[in-house]
Image 1 (tube, rainbow over the protein chains, first blue to last red):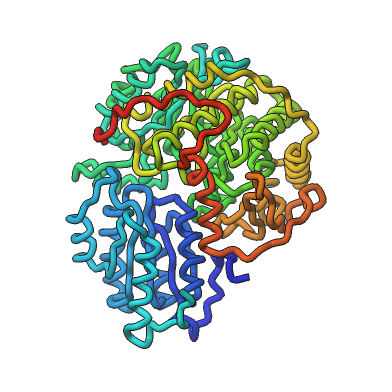
Image 2 (cartoon, rainbow over the protein chains, first blue to last red):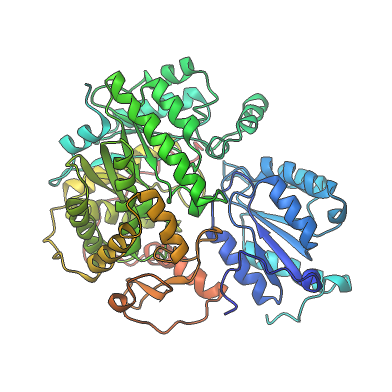
Length: 163
Length: 431
């Protein structure tokens, strides 16, 4: 059944362009955001490799380097999103094949709950392609971003989304 | 020997009285000290909490040091990194006879944390080899079992210093939502047995409020009965957690749900309650919000009576007993039994992404609000649980179940009982 979170991978290289990596970062122990994102992205026509909560930087970089995913979706809800995100994006961008891979981050990025446009700008400048701060409707924002990718470079095109 | 955490809660909670506790943790020692003092001073029967930060939980002490140096916020108190003299100063605000403090952390590799607690003479913590491993990361379960065995043995050494160490299982809270109660109960009891086998003689068992008050009362009754049958000690108590899933965003919703948790705790004879606050859905709560939640829970508890026993032979009890027995029969060493149980699918947490979890089970919310097994995988309860037609899971359907309680409690409609008036809006803007 397509709704079953797949944590093991079953990596076929020929599917790699249509694979999306869903992940948390090292200090973030939350799961439900990741389960939800997996289902959402599967519904948009991609295969998802879900790395789960508390993914160490090395594991994240290694998995992405091996999988060459169409996109990396990082979710952070524990308040360390800014700190973890700044560190992780530099490591991902430093890994050769990931220099231009679309990488997005979303969730609760600080601990105060305040909107923080300065931090969003810093995350973008450090190499993220989109930052979805916990605001209006991050799921809709992500869907919109995926659609814009699908309209973009052919290598990124997934199946036509259902809606 | 000084009165420990377990003895304090058993002396003051239960039989209609409730010890209430926050989940408070701040990186700044001044704020942590202030938080403990405010918890103690609250108009409620309280115990204190020091919740550790996420970097310490996963052993990234360099990240803690960087954050302390840069002045970045940490989401909890870094007990391993702060000087012991600093932590003693923090504790001196409140900790002592009549106000035990529990350290909460969430680590699958907690040996450093337990060594620090033992040096500090801090006698209460929580977690477990399963509940602090599977939901939270990628540490192999076998490693977590080894780490927790060692940590229990380190912690048991506190007795030589005149402190009776106390451990609470986190097994009753697995993933916070959508795990039917019987498996929460089974894991909580199994973790308590694990602690006791490895030298910790004072324990508490957790249960997190789920989606249906009647089912929750059945669950706590089942948990108490199983503990009575299986734990080789009288030194245990039950701690109820206010709902751990998506929390209501409105103030009235948040308080109503907290009130229902306090009612569950008192009605089911639980001794202790971990509260949630109005800020829960948005950010780490302030000290004031925590105090308001503690006082609200205390007042609600005072108005609640013990409910009639739902009877011992409920489906929840039968499932929990079958799960526990099947696991215990796998191996005389309980750590090994837990490993075999997850390999065989005798324990299998719905939606848990950990590589050592089979991931063949699903829970869902039924039409009456009870949590049901949608798929039982290889759990040895197929015949007791009955079968429900499994539906494909969609992101929208999952979100609907995940936000069921938030939706219901944020609605303005008031139930038959009139809840206590919601406290004033103090504390807003203090975050």
